[in-house]
Length: 238
Ligand code: FPP
Image (tube, rainbow, N blue to C red):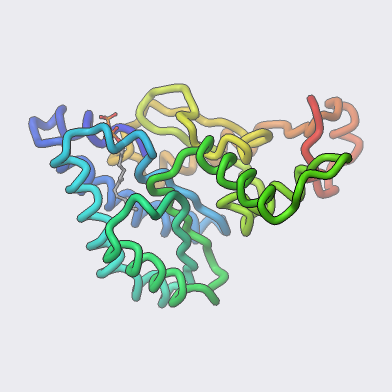
């Protein structure tokens, strides 16, 4: 969700006004995903590196998160949305952690859309915490570990692999987001700043996705011959 600060600066507003407006886009994206039949939406709200921002901005973002949890969880629940928060929650104050846990518990049974918010999250952190937890529970064996075993310890273990990655704001990098899971995702970059990313911009991203040929390591001819079959989910070299 990149570009909030620039959106605000263009309007001579403080950066935090861009974040406030960015939360509106989060609401509209949730609606668009439900309309499009998307079942899993994962948003990068706060990276492990975002603590380096000015203290007032960090504290504004955390407050925005707390207020969103306090005010919007009932709406999420009423709309059949399951909320998950990914990241190192040890970095947050206890009140925020209890709100997160309560919101996750309240919405656990919902199936229409799983909304995951990555907060104090980093892809490298995720892989490392998974390796540490896996090796604590499974002492090393001569045959080594498998991708499936490790996958079960990753923060997104409950979700299928992502199909589409969207980055707004013009930068063309992944910035430590879902490093493991993005192996076969289609990448989509747009200049549009996150507060301006509306339903029409989302449709364009979906159209671009629909035109991609997902080969999962196979040749184009094999894919054409197989059209209509479910693509394999296993990770294979290109
Ligand atoms: C990146 O834009 C955006 C963030 C670090 C914060 C994202 C947070 C929200 C959209 C609102 C809160 C969301 C929830 C789920 C409560 P930037 O500030 O780096 O923008 P810039 O590159 O233009 O400076």
